[in-house]
Image (tube, rainbow, N blue to C red; front, side):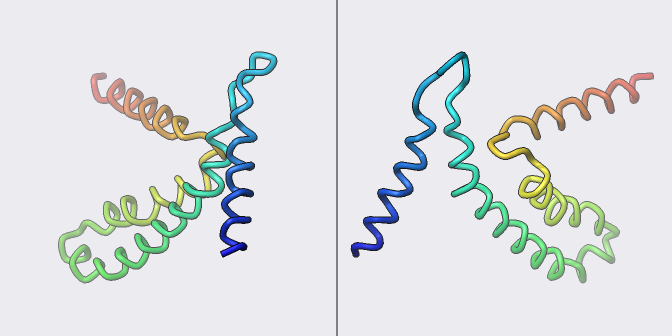
Length: 110
């Protein structure tokens, strides 16, 4: 019980250290500790589960010729979210995807 209380206090200190407010025009770094302690481990688990689901889905996706779609949704996207995204950057991936969609739409119009 004492170890759990110590862990809770340490976690609270780490998260609260980013709540100091804007100093010198800098935004608080709340997303960074949350990303490292919560989001990345959950994303890693999602990558592992997605890979397992992809392997299980192969007998169904091969005949329907949708292996690439299944691989992208179940393996590539969780992997990129876990390992390719900057620490604390939750919106960057959405902005990149939106830019890709605009670029794709612009090419389709021509």
